Length: 199
Image 1 (cartoon, one colour):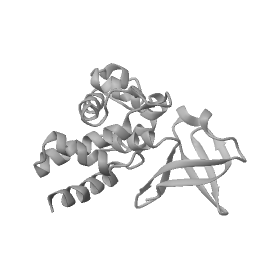
Image 2 (cartoon, one colour; image 1 turned 30 degrees about the vertical axis):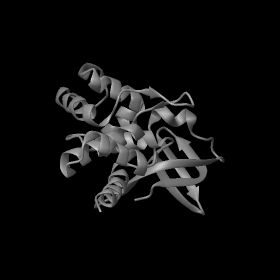
Image 3 (cartoon, one colour; image 1 turned 90 degrees about the horizontal axis):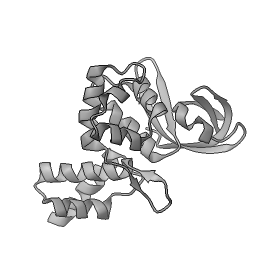
């Protein structure tokens, strides 16, 4: 899985970019919401990416912020949500806004996104309550949800499956999980730290 992509933007239209990396052009789909923040054609851009491999195709999805990419991966874990729907949701909402709607059980707003029906909106609210936390302000003034949410999810996993106390799990996560890690990377880092703590 490609974690990030840095290269020159050679095409920018609708929700698709072509990024030239050492002479190889990668077609990357991005949320419509971030298109205005993407560098102009001819400029160099760093994108955090998710590679989806299927029998008939390989697709790259790109995001400026790690929080958006992690939110995309969290959305894919909801039954009935595929990459097209996840991108539609992230085209309309930031991770912070998704968190707010989930915690408020605001199914009506989520179901306004094309393709999201009542049942899917209900599942999204239920699942995202456990994986996305309400928005908080960072020192730079930007909102941050997903990186903190990953840590919270990992801490809960350590508590539930390994018998740690809540305080111990949070300390292990704080000491071992880096901000740019996705859930799987964060869990592995925390598990390594927990093995050392119990050695």
